Image (cartoon, rainbow, N blue to C red; front, side, top):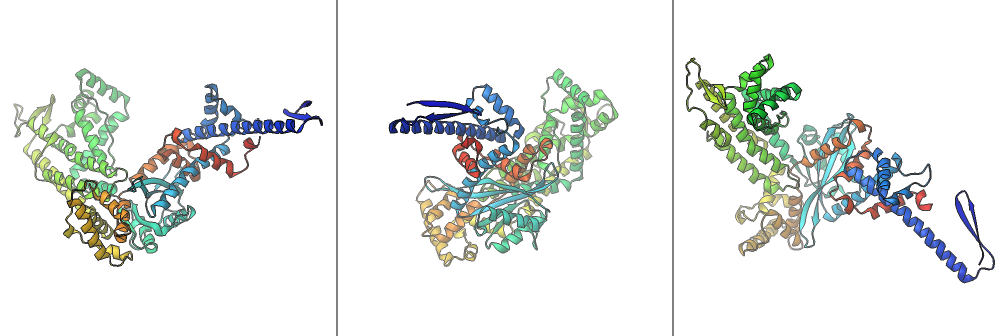
Length: 601
């Protein structure tokens, strides 16, 4: 067989004589098909490598502009398949439009998986909040909570990032319309929505036309929750604002923070004193009124640095330093500071517990009650912790020195004392404790929806006696007939399992799973179990989402569109490691979106 080879514009053409045999022609076609397949496979590998790089950049919250240099660096390191990404001088698949296509494919894979989970769950709940980004645009962020089932059929509530979108106006009508449009766009039936959690703002929870009120008009049986973390923070703010001296303490702590934060000279002096005295070093922290529980870290820092701090103020002798030295060098301030460090500790622990991901409603009341019981001890004057240690280091009563002044030594410094100071300090501590208990009770009082969730929690709580579980009104309102009789039968079955020593029922979540597995026998209880498990108790995931938004959309990336931000957040918040991501699915999404030159080359 005679083969004639010519080359034109860089392409090799093969011509064959008329004398080639049929077998030779067939073998030639096979060789050409194999070469074409090898070329396609090579190009596909290049695209998948590019997808992996775009995935890595998105997960690390790095700009898209890093991709060309990142690709070149990897080629230099020996990742040769990326070289095939450059089809010609004008087609490199590193342009911003190409990166956007890659991100679209990656995001679509994650979103398809989520929508499948939501449809498998059968029902879902939403958490939403609104915020302003770096470019002063108002955005609505939504997280979705659905049930995921393991190999044994046990349901676990899992929360996922759902969407972020811009708002024309941050009013109830605009937010309500955005929620409906987002659900419709993603093909989710709103009738499956069974719960919603917000930050409690009037635009969300207004009785007449708030977002929750509008949604309840469309979805019967919808349960709404005011974020428990927000309520706790508001309780602390309200309790502290009722005590004028605590407002003054807050100003003092922030003034100390600014004194060092904005002055390298003052910071260097403090570090020199700490080094000379081998004192414990702790960075001063700013205290924010809207996040009052940050007060605990501020108090701890000042207590740890107290001796060095006073030394700096006395050595500096400037008007500013002396104005700060005077209020912190008295018994009243030290007593209140040690007291705040003690009382804010359980509140901070409670706040962290309330911010736990996928927290169950059944866990809220026990956590809250245990904290209130601890605070009640302070309201009775039963001091403990750092305050007790401080009181053991100072005189039991004010003592007058040779100079006629009532003072005592503390950590090597002279502290002003007095009976009136001690009386006021104790009064402040007791008043704040009582105010905290009062505001917590006011903020966490059950409204209608919370009362329903409490009743549902009791139904599935194996430690609550059967006779104390009375809640069939909500189940009947969902359209279940004979719900009272069914509830009695289910409770009898559940408690017989508990009484027989069944170790698989350790808490409310296990009991709810029993009801769901017995849906054919107890349909109303299975429905209630699903709604109980899915009940969103906070919007802390939304707050984390806004933190991620601010990490991605910075002053250097302020032109990011909200659609690109949505995709980047979805990719970045995906919990899988980059090596575990299904790149094959992303490649199919990318290749099927439109005709790709690299795959036809």
